Image (cartoon, rainbow, N blue to C red; front, side):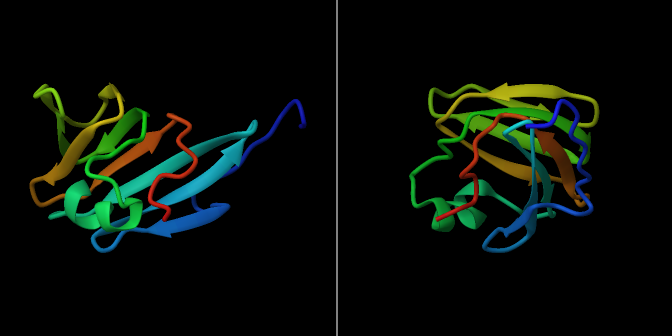
Length: 119
């Protein structure tokens, strides 16, 4: 591994489309996947990623920075929060989430879950 590595999300190593309403662009830097997610209005994990992941809830660990738009997150234990631009959020496995409003939610996820939105 090089001591300096720079990549841009406009030229991702991989693009993972959701079942509908968005995609994750993946860049691998320093042996870590970073996901640049675009979640279109109407996107919901349980509708648009669950068919790909084949789990009852999202089992990814997320460490996200929200660039634009809004997202509502509900954990299996009932905790919930709405996040928006400038928020940094840590989410443990076992949750659902959906886009709020008519603007796409765009985020950068440094959580390192390499298999997000993969079968």
